[in-house]
Length: 254
Image 1 (tube, rainbow, N blue to C red):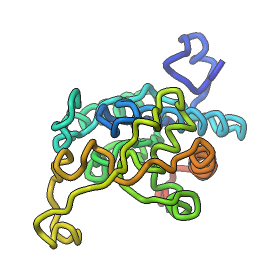
Image 2 (cartoon, helix red, strand yellow):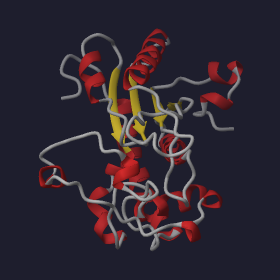
Image 3 (cartoon, rainbow, N blue to C red):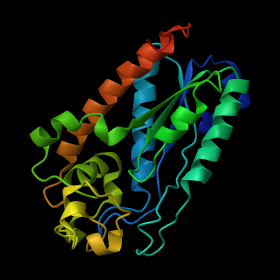
């Protein structure tokens, strides 16, 4: 039995638990090159949440893993087949309803594990501050170990690249088909200001990339992915343990 996995538990088993916080994985449904599945972002955040909860429970930190939200903001990636777009306002409204439910249930700490770069929950964090008893924090999982990227991976990128593909091979390797991967090359904009990053646009991903891959994934391995996942899980578990026992007084979280 996994006492942290809400989706798998009966009411009898849930009544036997005393949860200190909740974890909400969020992903997307979109193309990840020709080699990584559409559910990759949801699979990543779910699997990392599972591993973190398991380790946290071993350390007596009782986190509840909520069911994953599998959709994300995809307005600029609709050029690829079967991309499913959900507006940020819709996601925010759903998360707000979950926050209200947790507050009603007496759980006042929530960690969002986000698996998709197009989802932007920072404005929501500011909006809910002071309006709920629930402390809400956000983790973009791929950023947790970003200081180790250059040690583990030969090629950088943004999407379905060596890092993301390696992590996929570690967490759901039977769904990754590395032989189908392209080189991950991208197209430049006509405008230097956009390429330099000081002018921002909603990049039309079907024009930026060949197949939605940004960064060469062909050096990806399961071993690299496991090494990165271990860094992410270890760091995030420690945060969960610390958050679980923290007293929510007038100066929390400082």
